Image (cartoon, rainbow, N blue to C red; front, side, top):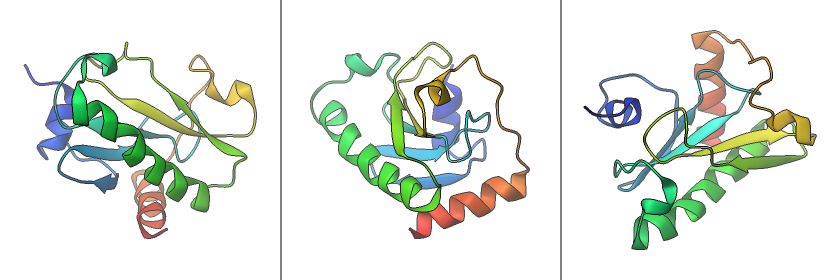
Length: 129
């Protein structure tokens, strides 16, 4: 059974896309720690990030770097934190989170609530950055 990320990649489930190329996709997390919290996902469905080999592994950080640059240009923050947890969805992915303090990356914290329109507007601003 395909992961939820594979279903997003296929267009079966909508997302607020930030960037995409032949190998990766990035979109806003629908349950964000902070506004601008995004995921970077390889299109190759592999459960663990370090099970990626060669170019899929080598290319994910340069792709994530460009997405992080755009997020930081739009979302006020000190920096973009990066996290690889890999427990919530069995498909390799990286979290990019706008942060001002270490506690901003606490995945036990309450999540930000936003409307579909707010997510869509933010995604558009990030894409244009």
